View 1 (cartoon, one colour):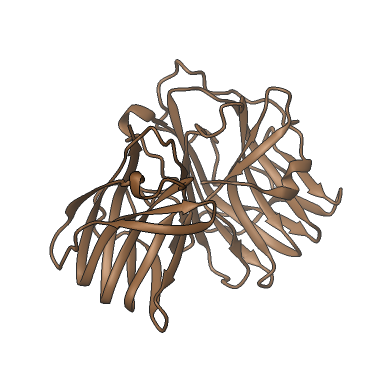
View 2: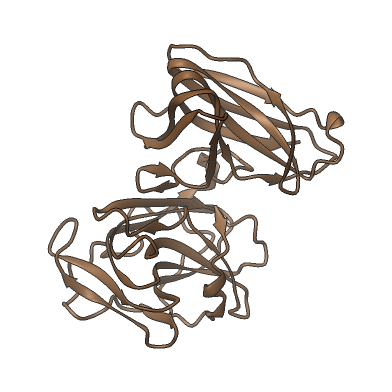
Length: 339
């Protein structure tokens, strides 16, 4: 889920302070951005506390404009340069919460025009560390598209603060609307080494933070589905026609002293599906431990334990969702743990 946004490393943490979430606070059910639909902002103005950073300086402008996905307003960034980032909210990092951020983006531009909704993480000094996002959308699609990301920022212990931001990369325009930022109680969510095992990170009509591939001559498509998810609002829909096809979640670094276990749910509409573990040395794939095939029916739970003794030079491990034959398979709640 954490994605480095190289150009954004030029930014320093200089956003005007707004109320932050203390560690002892209860998770908020309301939108912590307040007016995430931007209906109460005058045309030509920005939300209170918002700051625009751009490269080169003054290459982008941002303001509330007429017309939105819902209501009468949306937030527009436009310009031409490397990037324009508008920070909407600043907070300190508590230890008891994960955060959910979602909103809609509409892009005017070409395939090189990109936009996203994201978290930016900062050290105590204000130095930028990384961005957490489901990825970037491009100007190829002109409709409103959803971006969702959930994170606890546990992979960056040096992070002390964060911002909620919307961003445009390249030449063009991007409108943002119905942006929602809420705190989730980490106790209600499973510990998971995977960035998007719940498939709640969404990029348009696709899940974020996954890689897909298929056997030679095969076809595969990975979609974010709301069709009877096991948990939450979304699940992974993997469909195609191939000897095998895979959707691999982002790798986790291996601790050789631990045994890793992946559990998850599979629902097969046609063909067959399973969950497996993949081992890597850096980016080099070494091999797999396979689960059992699931066949058409309701949600079926699967569990696969690692075999690190067979891959002693592995540095990373990943969970992979597999479809075979002429398949349509759904996956949800894929959890990787190491003990």
